[in-house]
Image 1: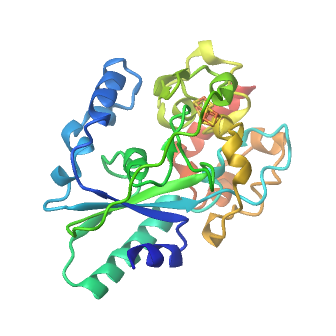
Image 2 (image 1 turned 90 degrees about the vertical axis):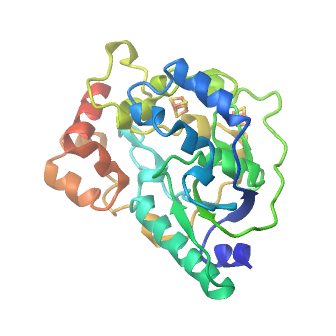
Length: 298
Ligand code: SF4
Ligand code: SF4
């Protein structure tokens, strides 16, 4: 019943896991942090225990309900020379769109089942969403560290409800990366340091979105024209040949965004920035951050 309501709300798929300690993830996360692969994302160091155990995050929680929401756009930026924006950031900030759907799903559960308590998460709290989605059978974590599905590729958001309701659990799917190394070979900054391990501090997404200071000179010329995020390791993934355009109107970009030329981006004013990215996640970088990124590509 929960899964069909999730589908009705527009989610691609929904899977369930027991709210428990993420035993396999614990040493991986510890090693990743120890090796400073989070760079200046110091918030990753916080809430280590909560990150690995949702019961510490939501009291009395019994199940994690994970959902995927497609963001693959029908059209991409027209000028092949224009600085590029990651496809997930074209439309309205996904946090708002997904939170709303999660609230509706929780409300549905409460109406149908009775008093159920829980919290909705979308990339907003210490929840290891990919690990939960993989545990719930929604896909496997690929060599590019993204969640992949044979049916829908990887251009989707992941969100969860952590609730105090005991539900039947799903089982994980097998890894279908096989001998492929397309993502590792194509990464412009060699951030995929070994299969399944992305050094976050070397990733273009980190440099263009998370890093508040100046971008280090040693990566100049390596950004493959990305000004906000990077889709390379997803674009080259053979499983993404199955991606189909989303049908969420709120994810459609502002009409000017796709037609802006290289010159338009280089001359962008704060007014244009505000107009084109009115409700977009790109606002996270602020105008000055996006300008810094565009200038870095010159
Ligand atoms: S997002 Fe881009 S920079 Fe980051 S790991 Fe993937 S290909 Fe490399
Ligand atoms: S590009 Fe190949 S190795 Fe990388 S995630 Fe996709 S299938 Fe796996």
